[in-house]
Structure formats: structure tokens, C-alpha cells
Image (cartoon, rainbow, N blue to C red):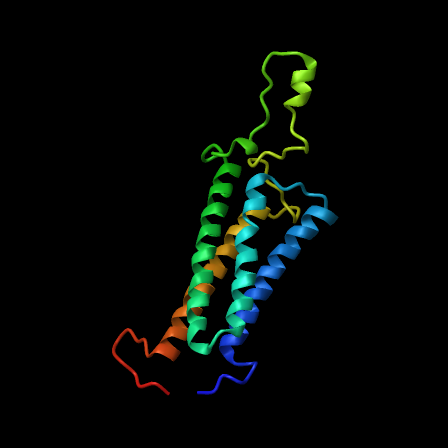
Length: 181
């Protein structure tokens, strides 16, 4: 099977993977820079898996067709990490558990001089991780919960697409073998 057609369905899956990553990062940028929502440290960590899946999608676009299933499976694994981060963040927002990150908590000032207290203050305003931001009034879905839902969807998309491509290119079947096309 020739790999010359740029619009093969496996490449379309990789383009879609990149588009989802760009959409998520662009949405975060708009929320932060245009709508003025300050991100907490967990919010900033939750952006990294989207950057990784964009890079994986670009790399996979230029790989041979038989290797693209591994890229999609890797994207599913990367998004599993983001599901964990978003679930942790959602639990912190809902007060199910405290934040394990010290950066997500308000600074505690010890006794000392005014100069020592000023020196120990953070350089930028710290947004606590337990303060949810809601983007649509009346809809009880915070930005973190929306990220959790998107992460679960992209995770499933990566694993299902990767298994589909493995079945197609590697004669991988649950019920037996299939001849290579």
C-alpha cells in the first residue's frame, strides 16, 4: 500500500489530534489574556499534554503509515496523564481533598521585619487552585471540569484510533489473524 496520499484517514486522525491540541491551548490563551482569568499552577501544568500531542501529531504525520498507530497510542497515554491532573484539580476545586502543591495555597508570612515579609512575597499574584472559574453563567461546569471532559475524550480518541490503525496495518485482531492488504 503506497503512502503518497496526504489525505489518508490515518493522517486525517493526526491532523485532528493537532487541531484538538491547538484548540485547547488557544482557548486557554483567550481565557487568560482576553477574558482576564488568572491560571493557577495546576492550570499551567494541564496545558503541557496538549503541547505534547501537537508535537506527536506533527511527528506522526511524517512517519510511515505503520508507525502512526504508535503515535496515536502515545497520544492516548499522554492524555491519560492530563486526565489525572484534571481529576486532581477538579477534586481540589470541589474540596474533596487539599492541594498537594504548595504553590496552590496562599502564602503564609512568618514573623519578621517588613523587609523580610516583602522579600518573601510572590512576584506575581497567586491564584489558589481551589477557586473555580466558570465561563458560562448558570452552567455549573468550571474550566477545569471542561478540561477533564475534553481530556477523557481525547484520551479515548487516541487509544481507539491507535487500536484501529494497529488492526488495519498490523493484522491485529481480537478474534484471529487477517492477511496484510
